[in-house]
Amino acid sequence: MGKADSNRKLWRRALASGHPLAVIGAYDALSAMLVQRAGFPAVYIGSYTTSAARLGMPDVGIVTMEEMAADAKAIVDAVDIPVLADGENGWNNAANIWRTVRAFEQAGVVGIHLEDRVFGKHMPLPSVLTPCRDMVEKIRAALDAREDENFLIIARTDAASARGDIDDAVERMNAYTEAGADLVMTPAIDLELLTALRPRVKGKLVIADTPGRSVADDERAGADVVIYYGFTLFAAFHGVKSALAAFKRTRNADEVPHLRGSIDEFEEFIGFAGFAARARKYGLG
Amino acid sequence: MRKAKNNRKLLRRILASGRLLVIPGAYDPVSAMLIARAGFPAVYVGSYATAATRLGMPDVGLLTMAEAAAHAKAIADAVDIPVLTDAESGFNNAANVWRTVRTFEQAGVAGIHIEDHAFGKHVALPQALLPLREMVHRIRAAVDAREDENFLIIARCDAAAAHGDIDEAVRRMNAYTDAGADLVMSPEIDVPVLASMRPRIKGKLVVTDTPGRSVADEEHAGADVVIYYGFALYAAYHGVKSALEAFRRTRDADQVPHVRQSIAEFEDFIGFSEFAARARKYGLG
View 1 (cartoon, rainbow over the protein chains, first blue to last red):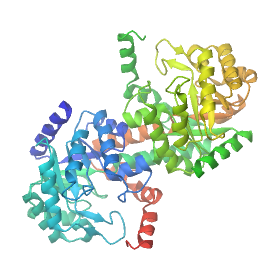
View 2 (cartoon, chains in turn green, brown):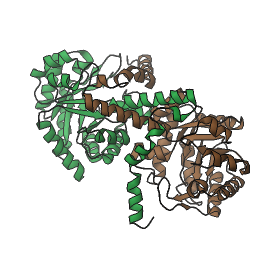
View 3 (tube, chains in turn blue, cyan):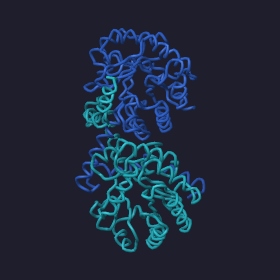
């Protein structure tokens, strides 16, 4: 776990630097490696992309804790930069949440966010939030459970995104910070609301990216971390869809842009040469 | 397992129809669903794409049988069309290959290919093939092990791809057919070579796609099935890489083509509205 320990320290230093961190969501080990190669400082793994890429399902609470932790571990193993993971609502109550924290810590991620949303994400359905008091206990239990003090517990409130209730969002985030959360998070929030709410929020603030805004916009509004949770998934979705449509039409893969032209570059990137070198070194070639 | 049984029958009917079957490779459930939606009749899951996306590793024999089968199951669960899968060299000798066959059958795929390549795939190292006699036993054992008689056992011979030895490839493929293989496979051979050896091969022939060749070229040369094993993977690789580079440069996701513009289409595709309908039907909305 040398990599995990040093990445947790690295991440804390990066947060302390005062520059906003754009953390890009990966949906598998390969996309995480591309995030790293593009020069981003950290990778995010969220239930939105894992539900899709692992199960082919929407992000509606169907991914299990084990599935998320296993996917997070695969991504951690594939990159050298810090990986931040989505711990959903912890999958457990305050008495059992220790197991969730332990599983993600063992997966080698630098931290997880835990949310107070119980039902209705991404949906025009009535949203249900965990009462603030229960969520505070969950955060306390999660903090107690970590073995590495540098493992980040991020407390996420959906009061603003689910109900547009800014006062409740501020009250909850500050209560979570007082309970010991390392950072707080409010996803999917409008820029004006974010600007208005920011001065009232104690501590570092994590948000999710929103169409219509640049990193500079989010920085000006006071975000410390911006999670681009769906970025690589949307890019892959469009890329695969377009390539298949072109192939279906032409029945000639040479006429599909950037497909066969990417083979050599891909094979170099994924590390065939490293295997050949090991084989020769150890008498297999 | 009703879907699996029906799909195995369907795949056999398509093969019997004499139509060339073009099977694009998926790397995860989303890419498999896109292949189904694009109108292709089947999906392929190979170790090349699975090693890259699940492990971030090259396809050099690192992927375990359990990992390959779990990935194939996730894809078979996500689509309605038949899924054809790569079972490498069977991961086991003839006495134990029954477990591989049973595992992939239970994963719900329509069939597997088992190869005689023992070492050196995709790299410039000395190539090793299993002795013919050993491979014949492995095929016999695999055929004996299946529970559903419609589960396809495809015997893959790498003599042509690895050594350029056409006579040996023909001899081996015919021996595998005599041992009970449902189809034979000869990957990575160019169209003129394929055309020259095709008349000497008994039974249906599976090939892999070759840069510079169209579906019509492959059909004229006598292929019955063409597997485009890296298709979705290369498209995703290029799409994700380009999007990340554009974001790194602009720091504004609105300026990255086809990322945020794909969100609504993706969410419609992945099935959020079906969840909302279930929630309303069962008193959660």
